[in-house]
Length: 397
View 1: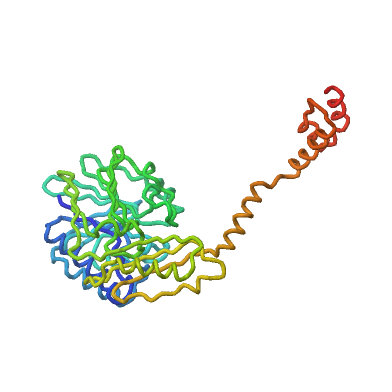
View 2: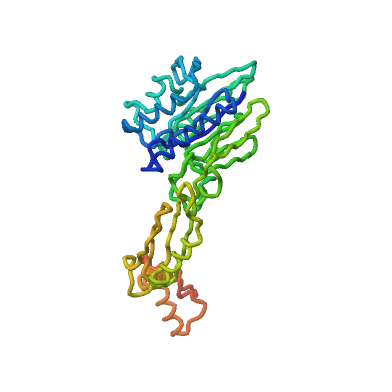
């Protein structure tokens, strides 16, 4: 059995050509799966960019699904305390919701709407069994939940592999092992928390691809179809889809025909004047190959300190229109940083009242030329009002 795998389409993201790009990538993904004659398609969350898509997004989304073929398939999904027959048009798509589509239990999820329209099967805390020519496959899925609840929800769900079948698990969460050091995202899950016995665990949410085998776990980060986060790791690998052969267990990556490039630069300055910063930024921009069919994305992070007498508002530069720029300036003024550093040093050297008292007592003992004197013990006795006991200790010494 051949399974097509992709994730994080983010339909409805951005504006102008970025808005169209998300739908174009979804169309291209489906076309690749059709050309490869996959039997089923798995989507690991964040099909939409918003939990309540606009009418315009819905209109374009339905047009995308209508490009799937005309076959009809009946699937049965089994979730906690319920079972439901679902008819799906075209190559059957089995999807979990992501964090962007997540809504409270009292509200309809966008994927529930697509399930009612027979466009896909929405799986959450359940599984669906598939079979072709004696090849049995079980797809388990848990939709995206807030990160602080992820471990608790996964443990409560506690999926178990089905015997005599290839078992796959769809998730949409962050994992500690895959978060960059400087990332501000949080994660409560680690790979050690994953259930045992699954042939392939597929995770969406993080927008860069990664495949690892850790012990008996085979773990796939699908990555996103488009750039939305503009993080360094995203720019290091191509965007595309995966094909998984359940018989051979081979996993193939197929890149999209056209790739939008991401250039990530973090520039650090030390006590720099605005003209120095502007010159360096212009040098970096000049080194980026522009003029591509898909405008490249350029992420510039400017950090460090500005020379005394200057502020961030003094740093301004013009950006070319043949690229999409995201520039963040996170500078500290040099004099301010110096003052903070001085305060930190004072904090390190600062002594408590007890330590200061002991220092004074030791100084007096030294001036009196007393020897064999346990200064700390005497001070602690005096501080507790044990004057007679302190005197007794002194007489013994």
